[in-house]
Image (cartoon, rainbow, N blue to C red; front, side):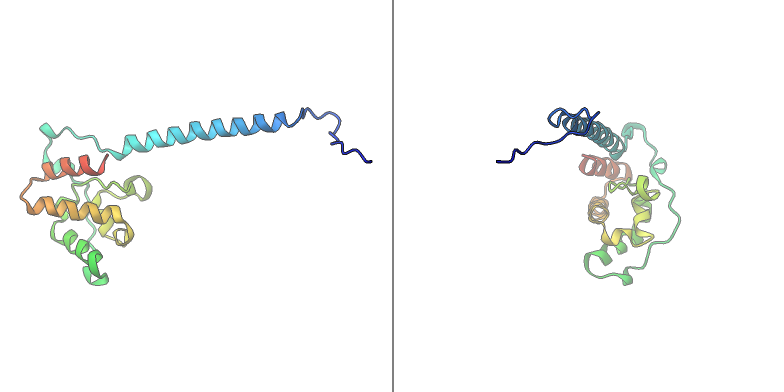
Length: 155
């Protein structure tokens, strides 16, 4: 009867796989710390902090100057949100975009999403524009719209 013995290379410090467990534990802790930092960083940037009591509406503008793409390039709801962007560009330029495109692709405001095709495939941009338009049609001021959008989309 042959005995199955595991051979451990000389000089190896592997005591029943304990080194592997330590390596895995270190990796798990590192990933947890990095993930926690990234999540806290994301959350701190995702909510635009504005003192609404004394804000000048023009100070909310992102400064987007490029034209909105034609709604004729799209169909359905996508065409509708591009029409909204053409109708109320100054309002959308006053909204922080909660898909994080400012950080990730250099957009200036929600309006920036409509100067290219980004908004055509981003539900956050579309939903945020639809909600902004709804509030605008109710007669809300840009400051009050921004306050509502920040509360509803900023978590």
